[in-house]
Length: 91
Image: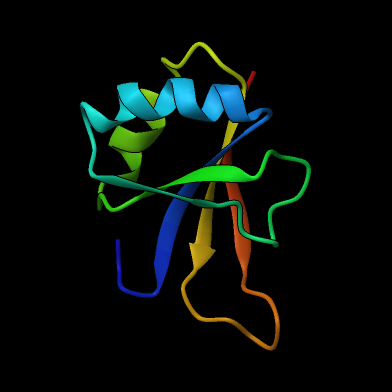
């Protein structure tokens, strides 16, 4: 992951975020953050990956038992927002 982008996993509910956080921490270095404004339709908590391996992150997300979406966000804001790319939606 270059210094200009990062990966965020958002959830449909806070309970899904908390439940998944424990499992994800076993495999990745993460930080729980408020869901970025650029990501709509999710709960207020998201997980920011500090990992540099998006393929490993995607493979792991597909194993989760809860609905979630993985995004790549540009680290630099343009005005009040930043570029967002949905990488994966897991239901």
